[in-house]
Length: 360
Image (cartoon, rainbow, N blue to C red; front, side, top):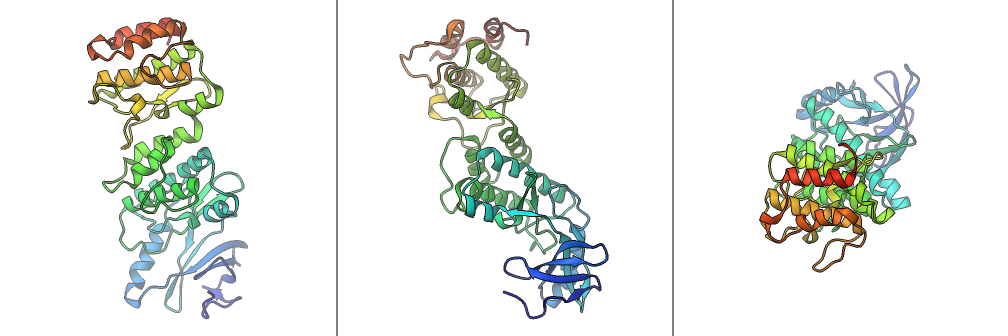
């Protein structure tokens, strides 16, 4: 729709010339004739009694600066109506990209999520809520950076938590090609588990947990995907992964409750990191026989995770350890059905160090 009061060639505030529409609605490409640059021009269509508050809110958004935000450059009044002048970002919207080329790979979706979440955190720290985040407002640039557009429009007094929910729905669209609806995508992979946790009616995990998980997915490989791509890993390498995870379980000071290959990320140097637990919990193959969550159950889940890494499959009753070598006796103890028979943390560290054959 082209609004009759936004004709081509009209100039706003004596410097912003209106050019072609950008999609539907009151958004146009414009030319800043003073700075000689392309801009995005949007008329804020609000009732007269809300003009002052909408203008104040838009000008607050103009104070936010972040590499992943399409900046609000100016909020002029023209004939008593507020207009938002924003940075023009060259790229394709996430909505267009998915509809034309299909869902994004998980790592690319996670990188997009890292950028958008960082933009939201910067805005929220400045007291600004986006309020209208959706796939059409996420711009994928040619350099691989994702930029969040649409700031400066009144957010209808929504809370920052609504932006996190919208980010989860946008991530869902990125990897599934559809909104979550009533049934978010199933799947045990970490990104879909994260999305389901963020969409849960009781509220999203903390921003820190979301940011850490997205960062891991963007940069590192989950252990389950690494094993699927490379096959079973050498026992010494698996023991090293076990040492890294064990150290993080100790530093946690409590129960993790979701140790499994999908929550262990491995970087390019083979270092492993255990991400914080999400609401989805531990898969059955990695749940200790006693069921209840405890530090001893975390050790059993660690044993099942290491079993998968070295054998290429989860443990099962009577399963043989064909590739584990000297790691086999460590796994036998970890996977004992009796929590009292499992090694202590100190014993486990000593045994894993012996198998790894390196000082860690």
